[in-house]
Image (cartoon, rainbow, N blue to C red; front, side, top):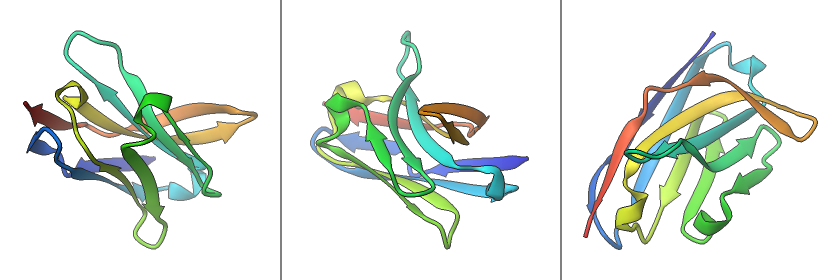
Amino acid sequence: QVQLVESGGGLVQAGGSLRLSCAASGNIFSISAMGWYRQAPGKLREVVAIIESGGTTNYADYLRARFTISRDNTRNTMYLQMNSLKPEDTAVYFCAAGRAESGSYYWDYWGQGTQVTVDS
């Protein structure tokens, strides 16, 4: 089992920045990919960014210019730096952990989510 705990969400003014963290614990050696997803009210959950154990990153194209995913393997923690935030970035942000296999991702674990609210 792997436990994921997100932190860093909150209320921010449009144009501001936030950094989300996702701390992983447990059987982390089974994990080869981690990612951030978000879900706004009334909308489906969508991918934000993914990082593989080898460092490969993937982003939702329309977020690439403003968001940066990273990880600190010494702390078993993944981060999402979000800049130039817009009201439409308001959502619950979820951390996911799982496997990267043959070009696909399989998410075995999810965090509880952290709320990000961007005020215009």
